[in-house]
Length: 595
Image 1 (tube, helix red, strand yellow):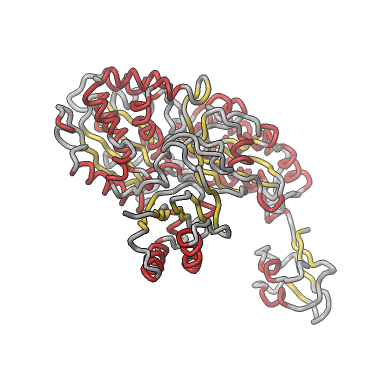
Image 2: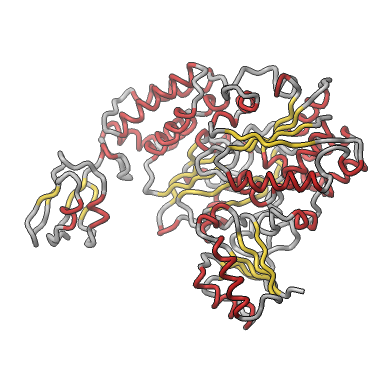
């Protein structure tokens, strides 16, 4: 029997950093040291510490090692396994990381304020090994439902839990299930919305990569509750690893009798198929998603009727996102009372967030509802790197709002974020520091939503385009006084008149930055100044007295805008300069600055 277990992260982030090569290197070194029989090597999904990848965990004396390379492996084995001492140079956290397989993590910095329910198995089990899932109570909830509960009991438990849809809107999950169950139809469908298109968001992808069976189990329970025999996972084709693991999990579940006819010997039958999306952001909206599955162009339609009444192929359809489905087995096993004890009054349970941007610990975190933005950024995220000042955080993806420092003590729940001028969304969080230009940030997100607009309704199609034109002018130094008024007017109109959630929320980044960072808009328009030096139309490069005349900047300039004699200070012709920044990168003496 193996005395040591080495777990290698095989999530997308670590795999991009060549974590695949580590397994062969470990096997080679273990064989060389004649330790192969004493050590077992496991693969896992994302533990969440993406900025420290590739991640390696060695047990016993549970120690997480980060940024491990092939060259580190001999020393790592020598220290941890032979000498029985943690390899301190690469160790991130050690001892007592997990108290129970899906409870609060121990007193360690990154996990101290987290509570992992959705991500309970990610980074722990091998997502391609069904026995691993079964060893952590996998499909126990399904067995409980099929043997001890009728559909009404299941819906009652989900309603009692207070779970709200984690896809962004926050609609009560139990009520959605109840509405679908009440419809009389010869056929019903269950859909998992895994079309995650927000910039910087990877919650659903990582959940499927790390624990696909929990999503499948949740969907089967949902099918039982609403009397559906057919499930569909709609996932974008840009997630090849998640698709591969989901396909294997579905095949394994069929083989073991958890999918297909007469599941676990019961009278209930249910099966799941995968449909790939082409990457249209608007297909995250449920009616557009349904059109895409049907083979039509992914465009939203007016509601009512809602999908619970008339959805896929005109049949009653239950749609939830990946995170919502992943909560269901836990609610059934541990009970609605336990689940509803987590969080706050109107927002129960936990929420998964993808931390990105100017923050020390980028990655995936899961916290109880009611945790503050400050706790996420500083206690879990490790604060702002390079001693920079925090400037803003955007929650809710490209349709969310940008919140300044005065909102750092805002609690993470649906109502509090809306009151602050943002939204929960699906869970993207992008942190910005003092080097970020909020006008340029608003332009970036509006470019995304304008490009992703399906074009069906005029307010979204034309309104976002006009807003983007104004922002582009402002960032070029061509803004005029009435631009701010026009942006507010257009934004308000688009929010009120657009057909679907994309258009209704697209102006949020612009309106929130105007409300919270008005001074930057005024500087751009009146003073023709970008304090962060991000907008190319509002700054110029100048060579300072530090210049020694080495001529390197002159050589790399693609438009011959730099002149000067050897060993004398050079000059930049502002009329020729295209502000590419190559000269700044080439100068070893930091003699070129923005003016």
